[in-house]
Image 1 (cartoon, rainbow, N blue to C red):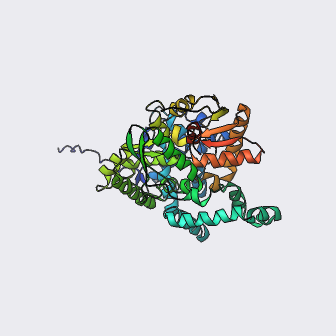
Image 2 (image 1 turned 90 degrees about the vertical axis):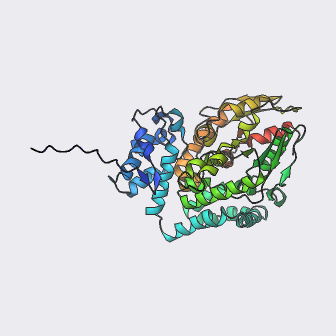
Image 3 (image 1 turned 60 degrees about the horizontal axis):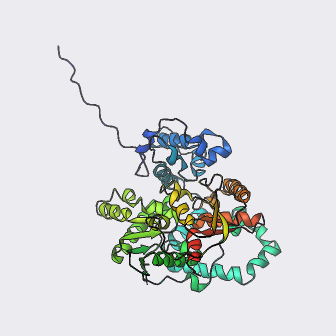
Length: 439
């Protein structure tokens, strides 16, 4: 009698969405420790609006057990991508990687009506990916803001005729600086004193046109601390917003362009003063892991990326530092504290500024509702989180909020302005630059 021959079970295919690995879903043990740290679950109390619930949805989609229905897409889209769940997860679930794969799959299956596709093309493919087009759009927005046209439109009530989403977006437009401040930085800013390092500076897309003075302050502070600062003219957007929004192919292209630009600059480190960009660039090795040509280059590049606070805190600040007599509080941008695990360094830098009093902010590491483009796509939840953040800021009695991300600055400043509050919102490099006597 013949006996059946034992055969090895066939290995199951790797779990993917949009061709991107979501194998990390199997690390989730459903312990629920993430629930108390998820802003959307805290506000809504529904399981599918928690990290654990969304991990279940991602796994079910990848295994083909459910379809991408309206309800499933809504629960996934409502995620901020703040990655607070990663900070507390005992199993190391790579949640940020999972939600980006899910967003890419949503865009593949459900790109939406023609108007939505046109809007995304204009923003992600035309403006953010091409610095000259973005500078042109910024010039037009600057005219709108300083010519009196904005004041006229607001006073006339014509803005009320816009669709609800556009009415919400208009107050979130940042106050653009002058043309001189929007201009590219000098390609090289020499180190002052003994040279510590030759570093590259990501000037960014939105950062350069909306927060050019912060880039200039960053270069000055780095130079005062012995860094020769190179701002390559060939750089463009790093692709972070594209990756977060499911525009995976464009994110890959922009990552390659960014790597090339800084490789040619021959720098020892790449400094970033925008938290979402820094977290994304530190993950270039993972992003391009499937590309044999770029895999090693991307990993080497990612290992050299440093947040500006992370870099400056490696050594005591060089003096002299003038007193900055004011009371401030510090808001942790999600992609600094959760994405890059940087928590103590910004506070250590502020502690070195004479005269500066720093008071703690309740829920300092909770998302303010900006989350890249989240405050544009999910205005209701973004407003709820904004109001929660503003209440905590006002309770501190501080005269300024210090943070390290342009999206947070826009979101918190808009929320304070809506309350009629005089509290300023500043990037940490602006405080340091003031201590050095900068502009």
